[in-house]
Length: 326
Image (cartoon, rainbow, N blue to C red):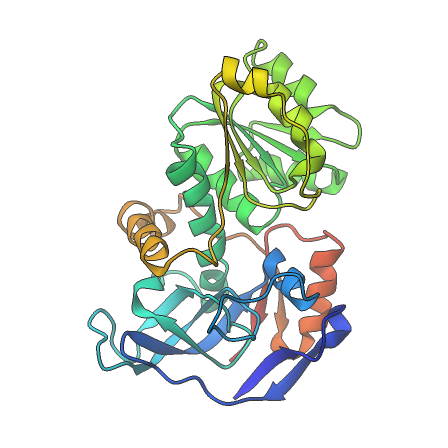
């Protein structure tokens, strides 16, 4: 099969399309004929040699895909050959075929294309884990989302909106302001000219944000804590702004604040399967109802994967960048 491989760690020029061996389905695995996959920041890190796959998993990039079930392991009971599916992958999405455990596979909502479906698993499952699993978001609470114009960020905006939260979102790109408002953000903060902590504090009468979904990390740590409400939950999803920041532990104790990190790829299979089951039970139907929409920035052929990575690195995307494989 054709797959994208990293010739050696480095920039997008290190991505190459090659013939590699087909994956084989073990007992509870399925092999999916991939029609589309999508980019994630983790792919860029892995390409640079900074985020290796879990032990025993493929070196091929790609943490989600959509396609057709082609091969079943002997122990598979929940899927049938020929089904249209999307899946959360430990790797392997940038290829014509991908292997994955059956518990990480979801049916594609009827109205969605393969390209739309490929933009769902990593983005919406991570948003679900951040807002539901980690933050236990309640209706009427105030949510601050950094990097809301990306794939996971745009999914988090939609989930928070539909759960009845008041949503703040930050961006330093003025071209993204209108897009975020149309997505359902109540108050968009242009951090190129505004202090997000001051804006959130003023808009909440000094109470702050009940939940922060943070893709930046260290560089925002002091301001994030300053605007985190009493009993607030600060969920760290990414580290674009570094890994070491400063916390005021007296404030952490006095205001009963929680700082929690989440990750998807390296979690045990049982935990990822539980997240998939919960999302399928409670939220998958919202795509058919029109309450959720996978937001796609652009679609590139697999052969143009270098251009797709360049676009993400330049932080130009509004929503997910998708690769068409089949």
